[in-house]
Length: 343
Image (cartoon, rainbow, N blue to C red; front, side):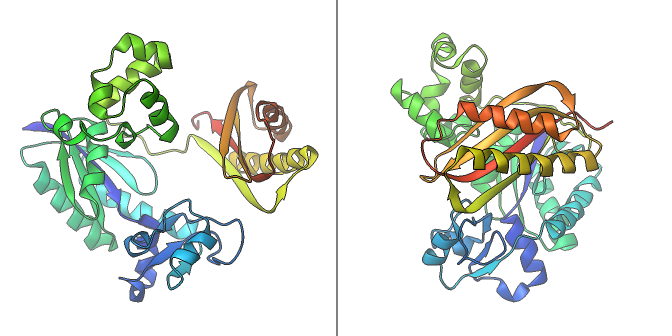
């Protein structure tokens, strides 16, 4: 038997959870986001059914833009309590297998299993999840967690795919570096400046050059990522949020710094209230700013001392504003805090 990591990913999770309550919507384009009213300004899509995605609707798209692309779609509001309940049911099913389980959030988790036939196990897991909850899932198989997670993308929707040391480069080598988990558009553009465009390019890059471009930690990490090297440890403790955040998209852009500071204090107060209710302690504060051109930037700082008080969190958020240029009106603000583990 070989050691296998299985990445279980619930397909179009929020939409699938909604379809449990409204099965008559199956096969139709369904969009979830905000309060479900796509005519209202400053709301964004958080999940779209595959039928809606075929029409060009994606998570992060403004709801008004989604309405233009899919005028006949069904638009539904977010229902966090429902999603948490459905997610808990799925994770209970996976825990019931007796396999070590690492939960990564509402809609994904890793299992570890020494087996001869991982595809057969994955098929049984899919059937168990569907029988218990009605939800479809895709499962990636890998000889480490990174390869298993990347494999899931090839298995969607509701499929199974295997990525290991043996086929990693054959599958991934000619793909652009942005296909790697953790490389975004900016990173890909920066790699392109150095002639690195594909996963194979990055996997064979000089580690010393990567360290010079990205730093001694990040550079080598990118090369390891391109080679498919990843963790082989399952953390079986319950999934616990490492951060909390609140953000607001404003009906009218904020143009005055005093107004921005006032809104940051409001957001800080909300997020601290959440943290206190969970008996957690705040160690870092981050601010997210999206301007009128949709450019989004964030900065983070460590607090002088851990706290559960609003004042130091709000003060840190306001001080972080000095790191932003704020040349354009502000469309969205967010405050995120990182937390100590619960006692």
